[in-house]
Length: 156
Length: 156
DNA sequence: TGCCTCATGTCAACATCCTGACATATGGTC
DNA sequence: GACCATATGTCAGGATGTTGACATGAGGCA
Image (cartoon, rainbow over all chains, first blue to last red; front, side, top):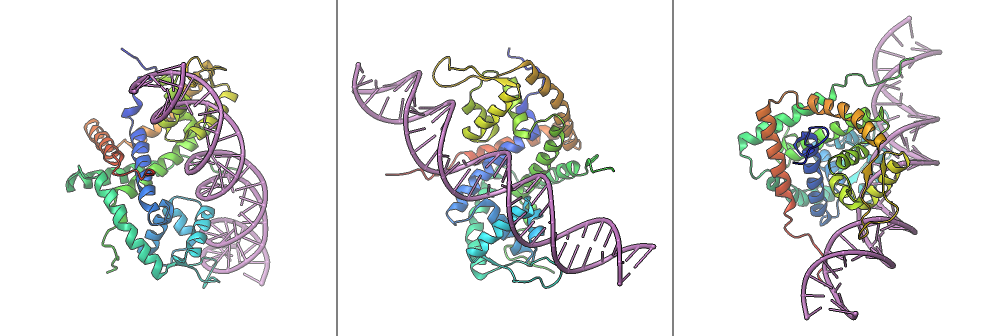
C-alpha cells in the first residue's frame, strides 16, 4: 500500500486534469495548424478578427490571453504574411483597428475545418446535454477564479 | 442581428473555455506561489517528487508537460535553492534520481495549502458527484486527443 | 484651462521554452 | 561479442513571451 504524504491524489485534482487536456489540445492544434503555416496563437488572433473586425492590438491581446507586446509581434508577422492589415495612423486615439485581408479570410477558412475536427474528436464522447453542462461548469470555474480576493495593489 | 461567417460561436467551444479557465488558474497560482518564492512549474515539480521520489529529469519533464531541457534548468534552480538534490553520478544508466530535501518538503507543505484553496475556490460550485463526472470527462478528452492519427514522422 | 487618471502602442532587457544535435548507457537481437 | 534501437542528460541556437519603462491620446474633474 503506497501512501502519500498529503492524502490528495494529484490525478484527481481538476487543476491537474485541466492542464493535461490543455497540453494535449495545444499539441494537436499546433500539429494541425502547421500544415496551414499558422501557430495556435496566430489562429486564435485570426478567429477573433473574423468575429469582431477592427479590434485593436490590446483588445486582441486580452482575447488571446497574451500580453500586448506578444500580440504586437504576432500581428507584425501576420501583417508581413499579408493575412491582416492595419492603418498607418490611428483614426482616433492610439488604437489601430486591425482587419483581415482576403487571403487572411481564406487561410482562416482552410484552417478552421481542421481545428473543428480536433474539437469534435475531443468531445466525441459527450452528447449535447453533457457538452452544455461542461461548458457551464468551465465558465463558472473561470468566474470563480477571476474575482480576486486582494489583487495586492500598491497601497501608499 | 449580427451574423458570423462560420456559424460557430467561439465562446461555446470547449477548447476556448478550456484555455480560458487554464489562463485564469495559472494566473491565480502564480500570484499565490509568489509568496512562497515558487513558480507554478516549480511547484508542479515538487509535488511530483513528493508523490514519487527518485524521478529522473526526463520523467519529471513528462509529468509537468515541459521539455527535458526546460525541466533541467528548473531543477538546477531548485537545486541551487536547496529544495531538491541529485547525486553527482548516476547509480545506473544515465538517469539521475531527484529527491526532495527537508527544506523542499517544508516549502511544498507551506505552498500546498494555498494551491488547494484555489482548487476549492475554482470547484466550489460542484458537488462530489459533479466533480467526479467532470474529472472523468477531462480524462476521456485527453485520451481522445492523444491517440494521434499520423504524427507526421519522417518517412525516408 | 490645467491636472489627473487611464488605456494604448512601442522600445529594451530579460527569462523561458523549444528545435536540433550529440555523446553516453541500457536492453534486445543476431 | 557485435549491432541497433531506445532513452537519458546536455549543449548551442533561435523563437517566443514576459516584465519594466516611456511617450502619446482620451476623458473626467476642479
